[in-house]
Length: 283
Image (tube, rainbow, N blue to C red; front, side):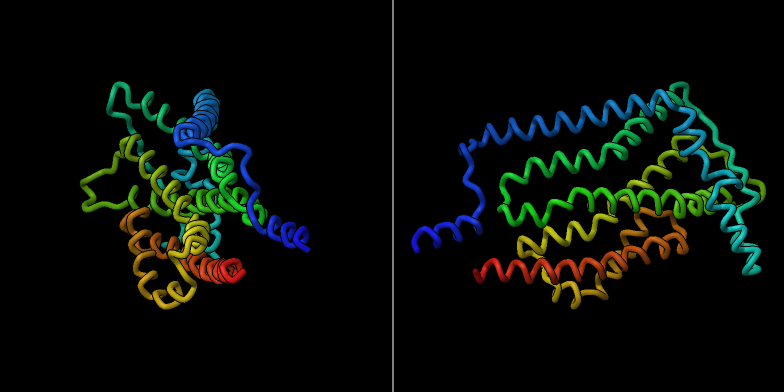
């Protein structure tokens, strides 16, 4: 009987570590996870640097052209709905470089950002490898898909921003004029900064369900709190969307809509995590 009780207890507890690691050993372990993540970013950044025509001509600079897929789809919708203002077919954005080392520095910067974006799933995997030994066996099973979900949400956010928010942002800011006597000549660094900030910003904000998951696990958030403060959260999400998008109300609304959907999904996730937490504490 004692053996059965011991066996059941062992199933619910985490596996005892072979050796208790000291603070410095944990620090050393963390250092190697960081080193591997940086190495992945560096390798992918070098690959991006060597493929500048693909990175710049095909990806970064593509949204400014009328032939970009989003702009063509919007023109098609404008034709169907009889809304001329929706079509982006006369976008002529003149991008210039005003510094001697400007193009080289931008090339380096974009390559590093590309390395971070492509290496993001691996970075999350390294983070997971660092924290997983501290989890219970059951917790490890439940959070095995966290790396995939976290990566998927980030990629969805980046794609959503690149194919929808970025073209609208470029069209709004690139064609906005206070007077017909003032022509727009956009600096390369300004254009790249806008594209990168919007893309990365939306990608990171799309991690909201993951953040809610972990905050609920440690008892900081509850589904009741999220439901009760839904109206305040709408204001917070509007502020966030205003920060990561240009001063264009339409773009802000486009960002807020998926964020509100993710918030509702986060409430459901929080509810499930709260139930599991209560069962674990009761047991």
